[in-house]
Length: 231
Image (tube, rainbow, N blue to C red; front, side):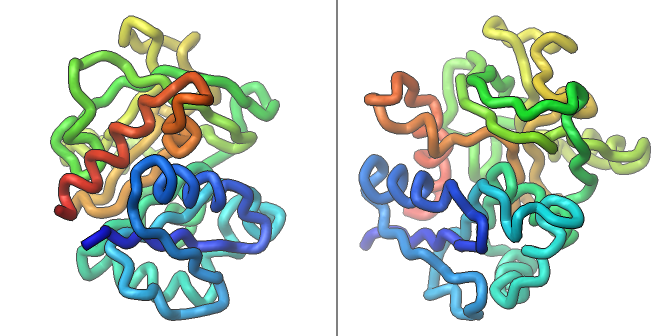
């Protein structure tokens, strides 16, 4: 039986089809689009909140999308242990929904950043990273204007103590530096999980690094990790 992914579509989502393509055509998984006004998650095993500009990113990124009808179902699904992934704008929605701690603010440069970056995998024992081997940084693209992750001292300590930091921006050799941080994010944080380990938010786009025709396939390891936990 094929695993079912549900990709939520908000007004302004623009990476929903990227996620659908990567899962359906590359990973050979079953995928459905989930319209934001609906409540039915269609028995999905995994919910993906994709990148884009939900509701035009008015107020704050993800602030309005958080109140879409489907988010009540997503929050309930996550609280019961369901796997939820927020990518870029989806990460921002998860923060606004309170499923992950911290906030997103404008990039340190105040400019939109769109480029390939390297990620250090800080926690290899998660649903989302268990198939990312060899210890080398992974190459994944970013595309955002508000990807500067911020958390206060207590929140940051909690993230570290509970091993919730999954990805950090790094150089090609895996070293962490200000130069390898594309947005000024606290501690170079690029992705985090909740305490239960079933909700992930990440700013980089693994779905854009799956098809060999794009010249990068490191994103496939991310989806292979998830699928290995479902089989």
